[in-house]
Length: 630
Image (cartoon, rainbow, N blue to C red; front, side):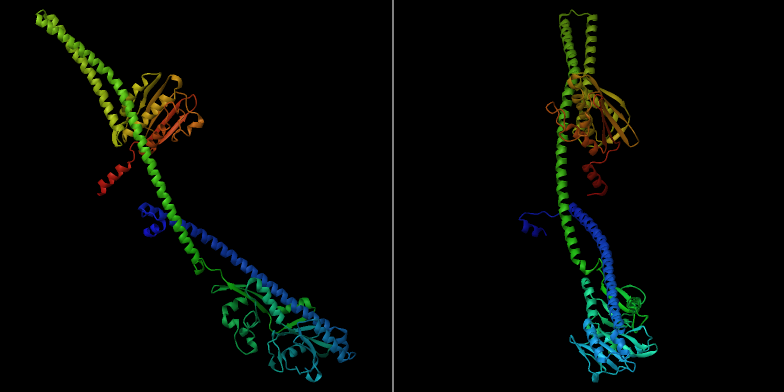
C-alpha cells in the first residue's frame, strides 16, 4: 500500500500510526453501520411501498379486466337478445318471413359485430337452419347442403333444455368443425338462447359464436403497463390465455396440465382468497362469476354457465431482500465509501492531533516564558526585600568596626578603664546580635524565594500545605505593591495539604494577582487585592483572588480567557496571562475557573481544583513503568 501511494503521489508516505489505525477502524465501523442501517431502513420501507404499489396496480388491472370481460360478454348477450326479438326472426318463426330474407338480416347482424365468428339458428332437432360464418374477415352465408347436424354438441343440448328467456354461456374453448379442432386455433365462446314460436312451442336455439381472440388480446393490453401478462383460467384450472400456446387449452387435448396440478397450494388459495406468496413470487388473482354479471346486464331471466367462474391471475417477482445478489454493488460502494471516509477522517484526526500538539507545545513555551518573567519579578522583589536586612547588617558591621578600632587605640595608649572596656564589649555584642538577626531575615527571604523559584521552574507534583504556600507567595509579591495605592492582603486560609503542582499553582495565583494590580485600578486608584482559600467539599479546594477595582465589562467577560484578548494593549497587556491561568487550572490541576464581576463592583476569580491533582503525561508514563515494568 505504501509503495502504491508513493508511486501515485511521488512523495514518501509514512505508514499509518496505531492511533490512525484505531481511528480509521472506528470511523469505518461507525460510517459503515450508520449508512447500512439507513440503507436497510430505507430499503425496507421502499420494499414495503413497492409491494403495496405492485399489489394495488395488479389488483386494479384485474378489476379492470373483470369489468371489461364481463361487459364484452354482456354486450353480445344483449345483441343476441335483440336478434331473438327482431321482427325478421320472430316473423320467420311464425312463418311470415322467408328464409332468404332472414339470411340477409343474419348477414347484416354479423357484419355489424366484428367479433361474431358464427350466427346460427338451429332447429329443435339439432339441424342448422341458417348459418353465417366469418372466414378471414369475409362474411359468408353457408349453403343449405353444407349445414350440419349439431344435435350431439354439448352447447346445443344444454341450450335446448332451457326455458324461454334463459341464456346459455358455453365454456371458452377452441372451435371444432366436423369433429376436428380448427387450425389455426380459434378460441370461441358461445351464447345460446332457446326460441319459441308460442308458449311451449319450442322451435330450436339461436347461437352466437364469439371469436374470443380479441378478448385474450385485450387482456394482454390491459396488463402491458405492468410489463407482465394476465393469465385467464377456467373453473378447472386450465389456462386459456396469458401463457405460451403450449400451455393453453389442455382440456381440448385430453391432458391434465393445469395450475391445480402444477401449483396445488396456489390453486387452493385462488379458490379461497385473493393473494398468495411463494418462491419469491407474489400472486394476485380475481374470481369472475361471468354468469352473474351477464344476467345483471343482458336482460335474461336466467344465465346458465358450464365452467364458470373464471380466474384472472397476475404474478410478479417479490422485491429482492436486503441481503441479495442485487445489492452486491451497493455493498461494494458502501464498503469503499466507508473505507475512504475512514481513511480521510483518520488523516484529518492525525492532522488535528499534530496541530493540537503544536499548540500545546507553544502553550508550554508560553507558560515557561511566563514563569521566567514571573521569576524575574520575584527576583526584583526579593532583591528589594534583601536590601533592608543586608543594609542594616552592613551599617551595624561598620559601627562595630569603628568601635573595635577605637578600643584598640585606647588599649595601645593605655588610657582605657574597666567601665569603658565593659561598655565597648557590650556595644560589640549588641551589634553582633543585630547583624545576626538581619542576616537571619535575609536568609529566610532567600529560603522562601528558593522554594518558590524551584516550584515555578518545575512541573513536579509534591505534597505541600496550601495556606503556607499562599502566604509565601503573597510575601514574595508584596514588594510589587509597595509603590502604589493598592494593597495585597491574605484572607481566610483553610489549612489543607495538597498533592498537586505548586509551581503551576503559584504561577496562576501570581498572574491573577499581578493582573488585578495592573488592570483593576486605573489611574492610580486605591484598592485591595485579597487572596483566600477554602475547602467547599472533601475532594476540592477553592482559591479566590478578589479585588474591589473597576470590574469587567459584560461584553468582555466571556472573552477574557481567549488568546490575545486584552483591554490594555500598549499598557503592558499581552492577552496571554489569563489564557495561561485557564490552561494551568483546567489542564494540569484538573479544575475549573469561575469569574464573577460587574462594572464598578470589582472582580472575583475562583480557582476550583482537586486536592489530589491528576498525573501529568510524563508522571503517568513513569508510574506505568514503575508498576508494570518497561
